[in-house]
Amino acid sequence: VSIGEHSSASPCLSSKSLKTHNTLGVPSPSLGLNDEHISSVHHESDDGPPVQTTLSLSNGNCKKTNVPVQLKCIDEIPPAIVFTPHNELQSHKSAARTISKGGANPTKRSAGRIFCSTFPSFSDIFSKPVNDQRQKCTADASQRELSKSMQHQIVQYARLSKVFATQRKSTSNWDEDNSSDASDDSFDEGLFYQINSRRPEIKSIIHNSFSHRVLSSWNEIPLDVEDANWNLMWVWGLPKASDFENLLVFQKINRFRNTRGLTRKDLLKKNIQRCSGATTKSGEPFNIMPLTYALPHEFNAFVSGYQSIQKISGNKSTNFWIIKPVGLSRGRGIFLVNDISDVSYSQPIVIQRYIADPLCFMGFKLDLRIYVLVTSFSPLEAFLYKEGLARFGSRQYSMKTEYMHDSRIHLTNTSIQREFGDDIDRSHPAYLAGSNGSGNKVAFSWLWKRLEGLGMNTDALWLKIVDVCRKALEASGSDIPHQPNSFEIFGFDLMFDQNLKCWLIEVNSSPSLGCDSPLDTRIKGSLIRDTIALVAPPIYDRKALVDVCKRRMAHRKSASSVSCREVLESDLAQILKNKPPRNFGQMPTRLGNFERIAPAPTR
Image (cartoon, rainbow, N blue to C red; front, side, top):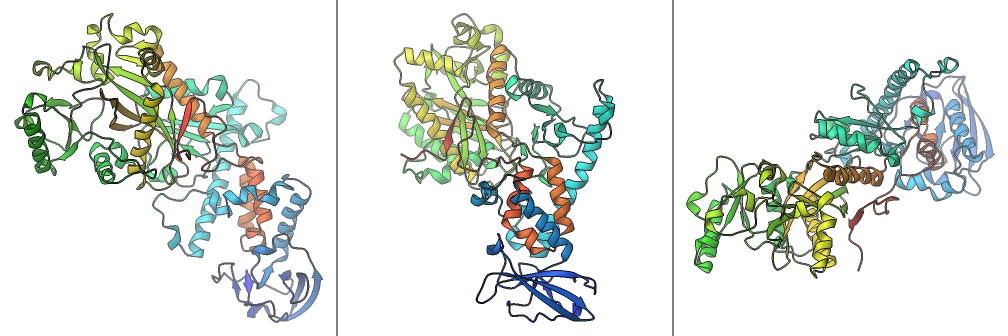
């Protein structure tokens, strides 16, 4: 807290005349000084090094003693007197001694302020609400929010450490000599995950992924433990805004909020259309989606577009359109029309120009389910998985009008083709693929090898896939706010036409993780493991966090102990075990089978 404006303030001050401010200039509560307080004042002298002035207040009089000092964080002290009560000064000195003795081992590291560069203040380790306008908050409100977050961590730790100790006591290998230790390193510094989903296929694949040897250091926190002391939370449904409250920024949850502009068909179309007349940052056109209209409000525009194509083709038998409800998935409610009188709907839909000349393999129409991991939308950071699924119709492709309503030919959705499993014969690619095929699907890598065998340049096809995925994210992600806790796997459905142009069909949130075959288990299991390894929520010391929170709450009025960068660096190093989390733009330690597509590589 500051006293006055300049270092020339009178050294003889009564306790009643002390007007205190915090470092942001906001009046702070009275410190309630009495005659027994002995405190220190740090300030810069006009012609020498900083001095430490010891003040002893007695009956409104002040006795002053000046001693030159070396302040490691002098750049953090404003050109005003900083008043620090004696007990708080000792706490600050204790933290400083920890640094000088190498307790947090920041001697070389703190010189570069590795942790402070990521978290300029202690409050930055706590997540803010998604829609919180922090610039409008007063300093007092920010301090109250920080105190609330620290208090939550203290209470939460106390509860969960008791739960952990109880579970430890119930195990057969519990050591009675250690029964008084309510928390040990296995809890304080452990990696924990929690699954919040009632869907058995989600629980199964996540459990199996964490039981793999590459993730063997992880342990599960049961869902009935409500405290958010996990490192990673895996959910199925959209989390509530309250689920993000009181989290640390390096705790991770596998969903973003406010992504409808990417995953809802009509809003995706709107965002793509908004960018269609523009070019990307690299100067490339934004033509990635077939001609699409959102009905009912674009019905007149659709009629005009339909009639224009009809005049050009001269034959409605080739003027095919596909209708999709905007709020449904897994192929539900989808059908084809080639007559405008057949367009009917009882809910909002999109109607899209049907790709009548799709790239076929062995005579079967196919599309690609591509998995894209997004770790940040603002700014954009995304990774494309190099393995996925190619999905086929169960009957050979035909554009004859009599087959227009045959879902086995025109729709590739697995949930639809599963109904016709008995129709798949030995000429189907999924049968010929052996262990790389199942139902109507084959492994992406298997298809790629077969296309290479046919003389196709699969490297060029891959670049087109990357380009479409990146453009879709750029078009839709700009309106999604920064959410440091979030990451998400999206399912992109893409299709090539006979001219090898890559088209975006739609983007799915929470793509199916159901495993109906060994092929699904292999591909989706690897996807989940590689995702967790890439996101890599850092280990943090829960007890160290609570100890730091307690100290800062007890001494939160001390400007020097709260704002000093050396102390902050030491606190963060202890909490994060001397391993700073990955920053935006840094390449992950483990990419697995992912390839980073955003930020785009410089050419």
